[in-house]
Image 1 (cartoon, rainbow, N blue to C red):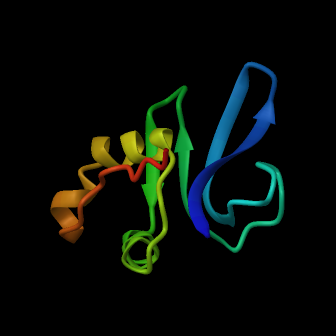
Image 2: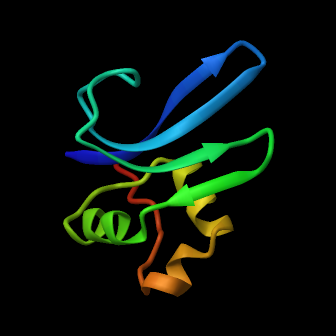
Image 3: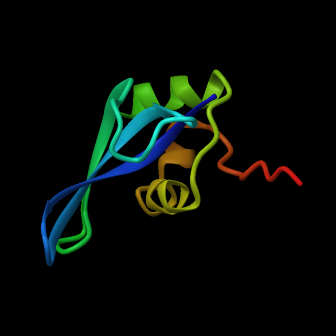
Length: 90
């Protein structure tokens, strides 16, 4: 299964993240399938590839909670017309 997930970049105290599509079995710093965005928490900057994110979600990709919150802040569900509810397995 594929998930959009954050990949950490930068030095200590100067962290930035790239939003990537990655297999769930891979570790966080593993090889990404595709980079679909960028997030800088220090400056509050977000850059997203909406078409790639929408295509991944329509194919069944599940979001992590952090990526879901970033997408909600960027108002992606209204722009693309998708639902961002988490699918929790028990």
